[in-house]
Length: 484
Image (cartoon, rainbow, N blue to C red; front, side):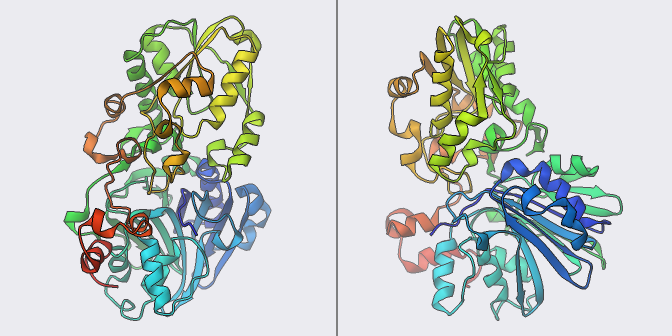
């Protein structure tokens, strides 16, 4: 059973036709999840929802938005990393407990979900999904938690890992971000209301004005009684920014601003830094579209080389990295990219890509270039080698799936059929962003995890070896402020 997911979330309050606004926002976030989508809306009296498997246009057809009247709404696009791709896991989740109806959407991955779930099931709780997101609902519904002055904040301090939660009650919108701020969550002003979303592109598409990012360890509540209220729910010692650098490298849209930086400018600078570290001779620079283009422009500019298109991308095929199964990824690659023979034949090509995780896409594309007459293909990556699994929501959960973790550079060159392979250094990556290096999570490159992956350690019976003691000490790590 797996729980993880990397998704897109959005919520609006005090906005006319809230469901339509969320629908547009989710379109801008579709790159963050393509397995399922859902919208939940409230008119202050009733909560209604539409959700289904597939892309947003299929899961929530625009012709059905009139079925979701109201001024408060939240939405979700899902991409499961290790969780089951099933209808029962489609978000937003809607539950009815002692404090009324609650809808919840989550982007991230909780690293102590298994431990908490085992404990709650032992107490008799019945879970309806296999997602980690449902853990928060059970925490909130526990009788000893209900009625606390800050029930949600109290419960958030029981969970570990990455999360951007957007929650909705009949006349209230709540957004919360984990104390590390692993993934982005922004706040915007829209007419007389507010919008929260995973990336700023969702604000742009609906004409909202960016106010700021929601801070690590912050919870924002918006309702008719007091407008917008903010509280830092996490204790100071837990607030240690660890923004996911892979958001900048691959996941976020280039027209977004996250962690205070333009994604396009960061990727461009990654390419510049890669060019400064490289000296291979070639005729032309190209990119694996689309996420490689910003870095390719930076690289070509730094080395004063010609840049050209080697591939045309079919934009009606989704992101192959996000396909839930290896077989699906392999099939999608051939549909997604096609080489341009006249741009390739007889030339030595430097091919830029943002990352190399499994090698599925790259292997097939390099072969296509060689088949079209490329004289040489030199692969350059605008990030460091992915050597370690991610426990915070990116889809490389085990070392055996990571090409660089299991093969040397010469071995990978042979497997990929490239004439040379080179990665950007970790130092080069961190020179491309504006915040200090210790404000970012680089665990997939360095193996240094900002938050102990409690569930994985538990599964390996490694509590005492890795976390330093017996059951009481583990409980203190799992539940930093209070017992559940």
